[in-house]
Image (cartoon, rainbow, N blue to C red; front, side, top):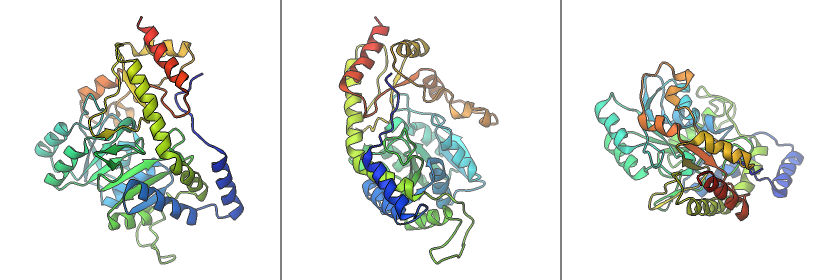
Length: 359
């Protein structure tokens, strides 16, 4: 079986976790502080605040920006539901705008229309879906024009770059997930990164019950969204490997794209000046269900991310909205294995199975 994802855990992670267990400092502590510093350095920003998962990172970032009840946040309907849920969890309203059909990320033209014609917008939450950075040049220009902050949902984009800059350094605040299937993992975990000290301070307080740095003084309402030292120990090892892991994903993706170029499927688009991190290698197919079944018969996993746009989910039944591009894409997308554990033969077997389906 060729799996859609395979978390990579080596002896070094096991040894580092054992070291934390022997230290008996299992919760928040120096290991977490080191991971925060190292990950924020990797992103090219000053501050990192570790969290318990990617959803709590999004929740924390929005709170730290001051987003709350009555506010409106522009975001994409084509993402994992956590993107919009985090907006609702701080009491704000997600305002869905459609995506670009090639990149699957926010369409800047649709964003501009929403900013120009709708009620005031308080933030833009853009998702670097599948590991491809959003059109941050256009979005940051719009954000500056309308004086709106940008939150990067980079949960799938560790190691991606836009015009030479690392994802996570392009907006006012960015959020990452370290779920096991991501480009790097801590088991479960998340991270908020920013160059703005006031956001970092509010985030650090929020994840620790609103506690200030001066002992048991709780200056605001907060949660227990802290990361464990065990998770941070795994993350520090994974971060050292991340550049090589992303490069292997990009190599696998390049081989797949070359091998599938003359088939009916639509292969992933990578704009000039952008380095896709390929958390997922997502194609479009007019006969997705049949292709999925054909791959399964060959022992190749594939998956649909995401079959139902957020505004069509039962939890969003109160939303009266259409996003025709998102709705169309959701009917066609299929993700193929691209993870770093694939051999070159496995990559070619995946391509051969797709090609065979269309012959």
